[in-house]
Image (cartoon, rainbow, N blue to C red; front, side, top):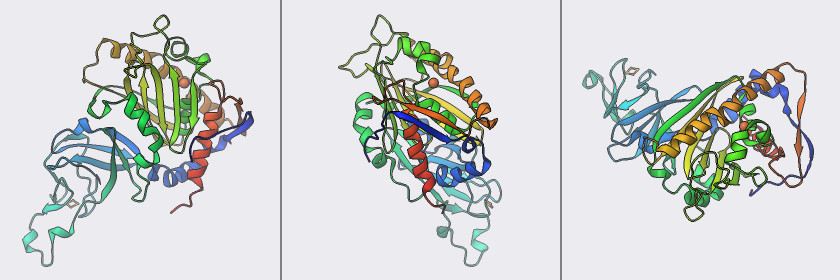
Length: 369
Ligand code: FES
Ligand SMILES: [Fe+2]
């Protein structure tokens, strides 16, 4: 499937109840969250042998650790002896020793030592290995997937790769520089739909639309991997922070690749990169984390401007919006929302929610395992 197309008209959103119902949320956990790619961080977060990070993916604790051979591997954070968790948080360790009975694994997940091992007839250390989790590097970003049969992200998102290479060429070397986060009191789909449609941009995001993107030229299009957003940057006379929009250097656009269902990569004018990840905690709570990836872990003056601007305008402005929509949907007053689409699929059209719905329904139709 290439680019999706939609005709102008009035359509229905998903039923309001699907944003509020625990049963739907549990189906989404099985059919979507456990089968999709989740952003963990960047390979420069764990640059050295033994560096690790532990993250929860849909309530499942996963270790991502760099081995002596430089490979990044991921494992369920579960000791195969009797199930205790091995590591917490982040840090550096050349071996993983379980706090319960001190079984000790190397960074490839192989059991290396167990107390009193020589005295257990038939006990073979070689037979015990941590259960691995699929991991993929994507322009230096670390993604994991709990589904062993999942399509590789690089093939799923193949059509986006050339443009990402062009507009974020140095991302594989970038470092974590800043984070903005928020706990949305809203279902993850409310948050995803809000992130992807720009019908509200001119109403809610005055700084963004006046000084970063051009709503007349802002375009969003659905693909098999998710939704691409693109706009030329505002000219120097209008820009809201001190970026240099140079077409030669490919710093003259605002670009977003939103990957169904729970992460996105953005390039702001000036070539300044962030990622979004969304963590659905319960049916009406979603943690939102925005990380900025820059050439240096210390942002320069221009980078500081956009990080601050994003945190205090675009990001902050969407906070009360999604919480309010969730409260509205939970009243049961509307059975389903209206989606208004124009023939041009302009920025003032809700076709991105049609694209979201198509991806969502496709994923939910897969029979539960
Ligand atoms: S559960 Fe880990 S050593 Fe026993
Ligand atoms: Fe918004």
